[in-house]
View 1 (cartoon, rainbow, N blue to C red):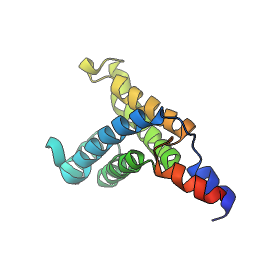
View 2 (cartoon, rainbow, N blue to C red; view 1 turned 30 degrees about the horizontal axis):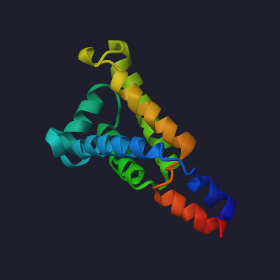
View 3 (spheres, helix red, strand yellow; view 1 turned 30 degrees about the vertical axis):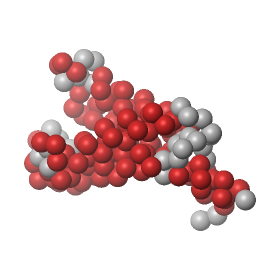
Length: 149
């Protein structure tokens, strides 16, 4: 991997604005990924989530559950750390678009009707992190400064 690619992956700014986004989004995504992967927090694990995904047309269900759960859990973890924030944010934004359009969109906006408002909020948080990076208190910021030296 060349220096230009590394700079693109880790590029961020010195703002504090990303910190609350990272902490909240990372925690939420990790919890939802934990439900899918490990049956944590009342989740159904890979088998149950995979069966549900298959039932709504996302096949093969087990693989889709593994992909979504991994993106959420590990992407959320990386976002919490501020490591590969832009790449993780992009993976999570795509995951949210799939959730919005395959599950929630036909139910309208509001969560009370299983709508897409929560997914849309998480999508917006993910895109904000793609745009600005991990910010001042991120591993990305430490790494980009080392690359520039």
